[in-house]
Amino acid sequence: MAEHSTIEWTDATWNPVRGCTKVSPGCKHCYAEVFAERFRGVPGHPYGQGFDLRLVPEKLAEPLRWQTPKMIFVNSMSDLFHPGVPDEYIEAVATVMVRAKWHTYQVLTKRSARMASLLNGRLRFAANSPHIWWGVSVENKQHGLPRLRDLQASPATVRFLSIEPLLEGLGRLRLDGIHWVIVGGESGPGARPLNRDWVTSIRDQCVDAGIPFFFKQWGGIRKKRAGRALDGRTYDGFPARTNHPVSSIATALAWASEIRKAYDASQSELLPVLA
Image (cartoon, rainbow, N blue to C red; front, side, top):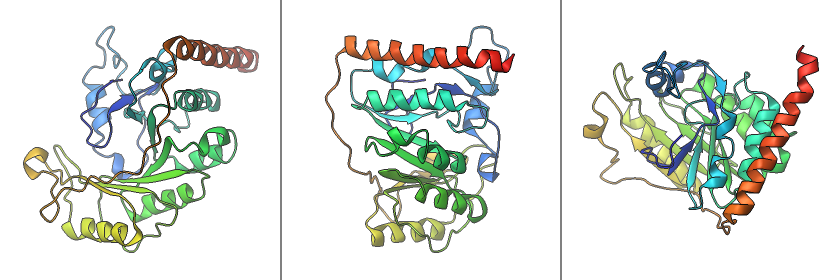
């Protein structure tokens, strides 16, 4: 969607899927839905269909065209592992990430069981790529901790948690195999409160485990005023990034064409079945 992003822990966003559906309390005040629904019915607008789920194949190859290495949040306006996204399309997205390896990708999902299943199967070719970081959202114990276990069961080189919005204390976490933790409060109208002790408990566990910790925001209605300082300092921890040479634009565009043709061919093969 954007070659530049205001999200504190990334450089850019890439949305080959748009729209989503709610699955847990963390979705209650979804910023992406609020943004998208503002444009429902606007002719020609990327979100003219509001927050309805849809694939955007013309966006598939976008990172291959970006020649400056970036940290890219994948599907900031959706969830790659939504049940409405076909396996073939997810594989095409993963293929782009594997090919355009001069970037670092942050893939975040609430559909952790499907991600774990695919990373152990069809996406195994991308699971161990150190420039692709696989993460799950955690907002509370009931929904977030099972996602954490699914992530730990995935054969990923870099695994991360986005604990935002944090809605309750999580207690003692099992953080083995986790390489990065982001924590943040909810922002905007109706924002639910964030307790300092919930944050410091997670921070202290990360420090003890040697895990990079990133505190994104306190949130609230006036999130800029609340800021992101915790105990007088900001926490901007990140995992180490890999460095790969940038492929020539000619090579990158050839890959883009190849990936799109492979995906289109997979859809053509499905047409007789769907008919």
